[in-house]
Image (cartoon, rainbow, N blue to C red; front, side, top):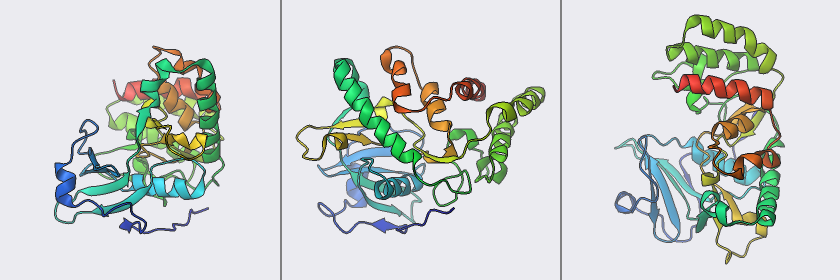
Length: 287
């Protein structure tokens, strides 16, 4: 099943809070996040945040448009998606959300407050799980997956995707393992093990980076419903992954320095066996 697009890129919203910022205004705006990987995130006035650079993929903005249209999840509004043909830089102009991250707010929250937040987050991610499963594992509109585990210097569809079976996706992870210099005998051992662990999972739309730094608690003065105070950001790696992917990545990101690790199962259905194997593979790939 293909997801039909209801928008085209370049994309420009018609209901703007004020004129879109110019290229000069964007380049001269203050950073609101550390620059990394050919990406800058800047704040322009009180209405706009712009993520731009050679390392920005416009799929992130398309993911946000898609999720905003198809679910009840609160994500920043996307006002523009475009490329500068002269510089090659991509631009995602989105709504500026005033508030603090769940990471910074967490130590001050009471147990009842945490329970209320987790209840809303569970609803959000259940909503993602309900999106119809397509006939492929890949990014929005049947394109390659953007998680680093599928990255190569030069395009290689056997590693980057999209994939039309879970077996092909499993093989892609093993190809990436040897691409990174992993021992061939270890790869062959994993090839024998994967069919027992990574099997029977349907393609599920996945945020791909469930961490508290990617959840913003909007300021209480906002007049929307209580659950819409929780805004999910950073849809950069989102796409159609196996159903275990969200949980496994959330576990991989844990620092085990506070009680957040004990609340993950309140948000996502656990895939404990998959998480153990997945984390081991990921550590080997980035060691």
